[in-house]
Length: 285
Image 1 (tube, helix red, strand yellow):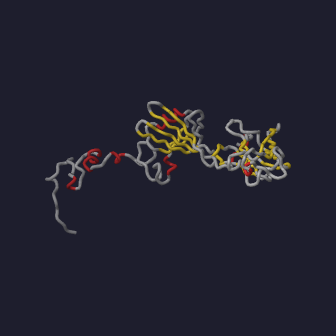
Image 2 (cartoon, rainbow, N blue to C red):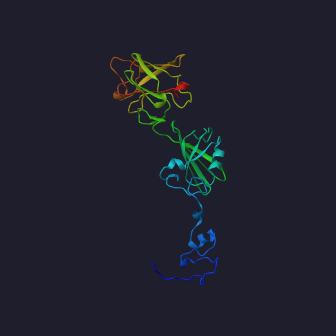
Image 3 (spheres, rainbow, N blue to C red):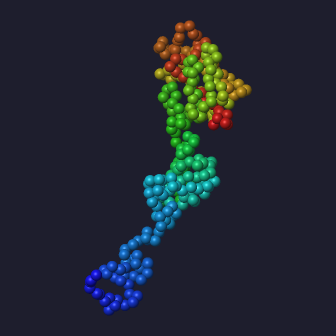
């Protein structure tokens, strides 16, 4: 092997850093080397999920395997949950405890926290319930308002096409057939005789007072039947329907049916249904 011998003893003093132009860092310590090489603060942080670490595609919220990047808390009040979220911007959040009251947060359910300057919101969706709620507020005023969303699982459409609060509702048809919302699973309906139906498996009508029965109507919003009912000791509901006529100068709007007088027992009209909103046993909720 042959080559040219180079003597560097004359060009460098022992302990003098090798310049960047000569292949060195120009520094005799790590911090100085990073500065001279143009490295920023990320050069001293490891990857991971901690707030001081650098996220990867498997830990960064919204990228890749996102569930690993969620923030999980166990706050028992909405104020404690807000304090836990702190000054973070858009972040995935889950609370391990159920929070009730005016600003509810369902237990174990995925949520999104977002703060922009001094205002913020928390949106959560129940993982096994139809609850979808957004709580909003500001730094100066705290929590201000709570909005529950209406959707296909907590509303029904009545015979006139209007949206109504559901949970739980049964639609009863002419022949005693029926459909139920998810919350009314377990309820059954049987037709006893003409104009008499029994709703089994419930605990009477829904007690929140919003609505209990929705009677089918014609195009002029006139009820097609009279409806009476009896809540039995078991909680089952007997429903009685009767023919209903209306005084009108227009014969076709009187709802007259040959063979039936006003108040005669009659089935729920064909092509229509009677909506019944009930209370459910605790085990069925």
